[in-house]
Length: 89
Image 1 (tube, rainbow, N blue to C red):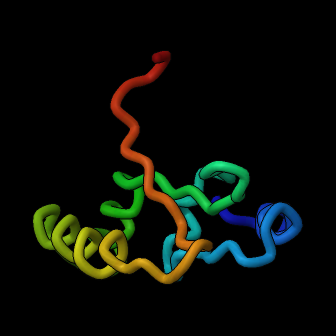
Image 2: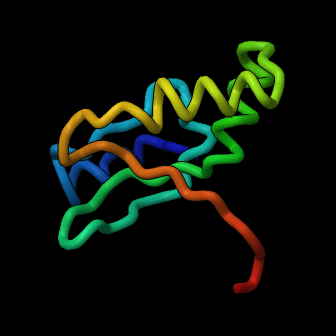
């Protein structure tokens, strides 16, 4: 969950890091691409947000997320989306 503390940590690590609007509950932390800190989101939690908030089916949510969010490069601060494939790996 994206809190004010987490927002501050991300801004301190990289003032240019962008957040994905409407997906605060899917925020999982800060990741690094080379030496750049970026916001990281759980892909499946983003799908759940779209299904619960917007009433989309799973297929609609995945298509929407892929096209409108993952397909949107908005510069070096673009967030990343992580597909968690198993616990304890």
